[in-house]
Image (cartoon, rainbow, N blue to C red):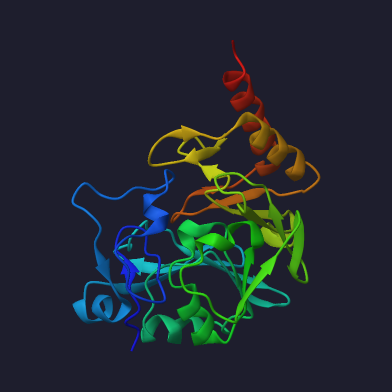
Length: 269
């Protein structure tokens, strides 16, 4: 039974009961005006409120989550890479039906997560599929439920599997990471960005924020470095953290154009 406490606001699962959620107390998230509230996976499953949601999001990319969304509401992406299925980011809800559906797609060879807001039930996912979890070491302090399956990587890039490269941009969190899949979009390349590079309603641009709910902009130096790090990588599409939050074309230019616009406004005297 999965009764480890979960924050109902951000979905983070902790190893033991506690009074506060450090992630929600941080200025990049928030504690609701009604106060801190806790739940657990068994309670969520027993409520009958949530059902699995699995839908294609793009070529070789399957969205994984629930209806309704839980907590922050991000959906994960199952990357159907040549080296095996890989899970990018993590949806907070997980039940036997969802496990069965992912197993029917071939299971998972590994998990990587863009930043701490999406750590959620990563240990549950790891144990269900016997898959290692890859997190950037700069965000180790935010791990709520330590586990031997968690691998902390360091530096700027890490080839997490053949043809899948993690890039630490440092946007939003010091360990804020994106995933580059050059074989995505039928060989034109895909960038899986969570909300490190945020897909916004105007699909001709993306956004960069330190805090989304509290509207704190990212530091110009961080945005400049992120654009420089992504410049050598080719990608046609950008897949954000939400259902259908996708830039379908010209993704590389969209990022570079957006960074230039951001810096022009940020540095305007």
